[in-house]
Length: 395
Image (cartoon, rainbow, N blue to C red; front, top):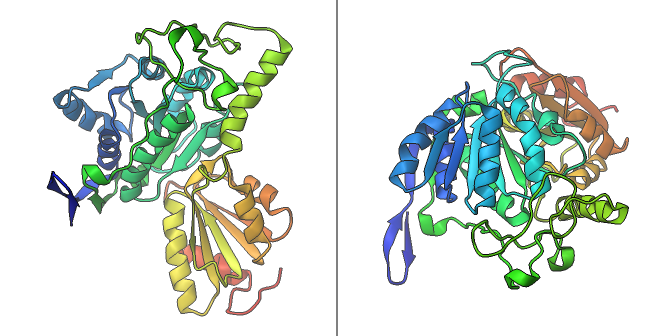
């Protein structure tokens, strides 16, 4: 459909049938990607392949690095130079990147890391799907640091959430991880790509003071300090060491405490901006599925099937996994009898659901590590075992 803007030629939305990895790459370009560094790894390689062709045509920079450690370091450096930057990998590559993910968190360098998950550990199942990097995405690097993690369940979301990941990275001066899966990275679906004028883009906030008054980590301008790229006339110090507001290393307890607490506060306390949950048929639900990634697709199918049988089943789909939406789960647990958590791992996020539920509802883990995605009928079998026959089930 056309998008009208005064004095501008009418732009058209594009409807295409494409692979999830290509959708992610196209989303990155739509978000303003200026620098990509990566190393080929199944099942994410198509992202790099597409960008290697398209970025030079747009005056952007693509580089294949010698490994994933260097790739992550490169996008952190590019971010500090002012570029919107991204890398893409899979589990073994992300394992190598996590030290520099921590560096990005310490420097408050906006950047995006896409992890198209596959089976593990070690070499695992390079061409098959899993969703077992949920905890690694949150806690991969050492020390206390905040991070934002999104998860996609469709090819459309591969596109949309890549843009959202860039926007959140810029808004919060933080590394952002987008978890895809081999299933969603390699599936093909019809998606709609908005016209350029329809896409809302966020840019990092610049300083309102001159070089003589600028402090790169000063909380006087808020929990997310203004950012100045290298080479713009502002001289400041950058280090991975714990630092003061000027960026210089410090061992002073009060400065250490202020830095670490501000880092956590800027993400963990901005609940509204970092809560992304989708509800399906939850108004009268007696049993709810809590799902993310491809498992949420099965959850949606299960809800439709259950409702056709008179079972009051609902779905809570988690789009932003970290920070975890504790209050969302706690509120839902107060209204339903059971929470079912299907995962393509041995049960990683279910423990967070249990913590948030606080015993208000029974929490049930469903796990699968066969490299096959969940089917709706498998979830329905569990629902029926819990008494989901249209009336209140036994707890």
